[in-house]
Image (spheres, rainbow, N blue to C red):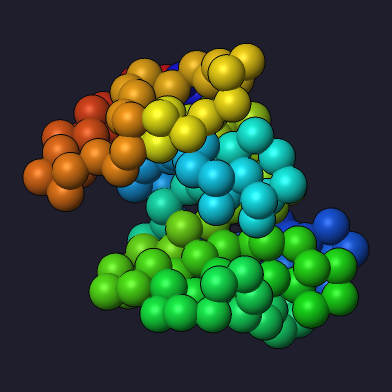
Length: 153
């Protein structure tokens, strides 16, 4: 598992919305749920959970798209790239689509979720797999293991 260089910038496909992370991810994931498949137009979505204080939009103004509920999915208003999500009740982190980063070399998925919905030909390098979402009590151990692995990378 490689380590992500911090600080780092990134942006949408057209470049109108730019962002910066100044804190390392607390975990990286691939989600195979059908919702992520549809929103990403791909087999799964990739994300890096960034501490909220280590994330900022530095250019442009993303808009809410996808599902318009309590969990807010942010998109570029011009190219409509799905950039990040602010999950309901979890304001302490931002779920950044890791492919938005200018250098994606350090963001392999550590955990994969919703493997019960994944396309049959898909494989990732994730260390941990869950048929649905991991139970909340598992996250402490997962985040600790992720931190240890990335510290030694």
